[in-house]
Image (cartoon, rainbow, N blue to C red):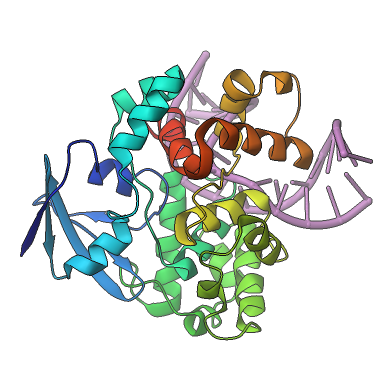
Length: 278
DNA sequence: AGTAGACCTGTTAC
DNA sequence: GGTAACAGGTCTA
């Protein structure tokens, strides 16, 4: 087993893993948290500023948690100094990081996430895994396995209108060259959005979730119902009486990006957490 | 360019 | 105990 010591407020593992970025991590009874990145199983536990790893190597964990890419504590101090709303959200929940997820799982996770509470999203994804691979809690099924799924089968498992989208999106993804989704990592956000929104069921909000949570697009701000409300009341008051049209989506996201800069997506997650999860 | 409704379903609030 | 509103939206007319 490996232990890492982290600076204070650099990471709150529990809050990070259950903040609505990903939906299939499990709490074990002995305090360990387990999940998958691609086919690799991770086993993590945090006590104060110590992070313990089991069944996995340090490099994988650092890559997944993005520990060497952003000194979040320092960044949060600067954001707090310039924005009272962020300051209060961070004070209540410091250490909320963004993760580098497997784009394949992230793609299908947020495809299922339309107007569903986090608990239901978890259930739907567990059902997808069980139907595709027989293992509800195992690694996320490969595209090949997902291609065997039928809409009727997924509807029977509670996916609702998302069932058709999952089946159709998997088929469309299969037409792309191998590794296509991974190849979007690091591309400009606008390019990622224009590559993903042609998929059935993926509009701008879900494209931004996939970009932010798995493709390193740190400035992406997925404007959902909560972030829209925060934007209207705090960062773009001129939108107070507006509705969330595509043009206003852009204005809201831009307001966050002006306020928080190239890591606006990270700030967004802490604000989202206060509104939607906590 | 912006608005209105439909779309699945489990949970929570009266 | 039934009913309505809501949930990390997208698509079509």
